[in-house]
Length: 200
Image (cartoon, rainbow, N blue to C red; front, side, top):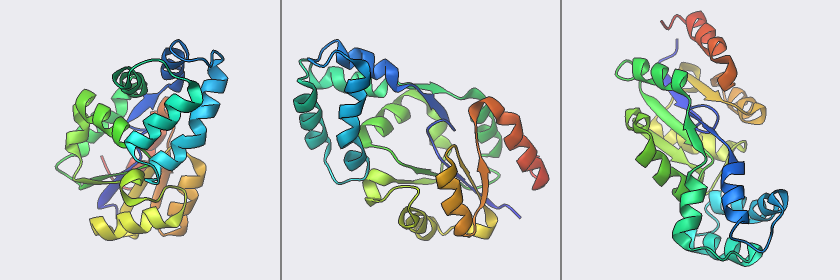
């Protein structure tokens, strides 16, 4: 029986499009090619989201590798302006809230979480969260799941984990979680999974 839910964020609760940020950053950078902008940012983004690099260090490194001419405020605004609500999932969370404990498990950063909490009130429906940048571990590696399980008192056999990436789902299954491999364009498949578990 499912008694608890554990949600990923990106392409689950919100859709994201990094190309919006890349266009804004390229216009203020000596690196004009948008693919190259994203490639260079990726060299430091994982370390930042894994908590191995502070916000100040991340912003400094991005400015250096892009020869970025904009302000820190402009960068943060662009980096946060990539998300749009996945409305069917927001509707579902509202219906589950108060009936089940709801938790978040996400590879993310403080910049993104500040913007998400500011822009989407759906995040107020969650009991607690495990973020990669805080615990210095990330999916799909087991330690972040083990931290979430321990910190939130989760029972994997009674918890449904919802994520958009197959490797993340695979690890959760190995650790005994019920899972649903989610795609925002196939929300009906999640509803069918819930129905199979007897969740209206």
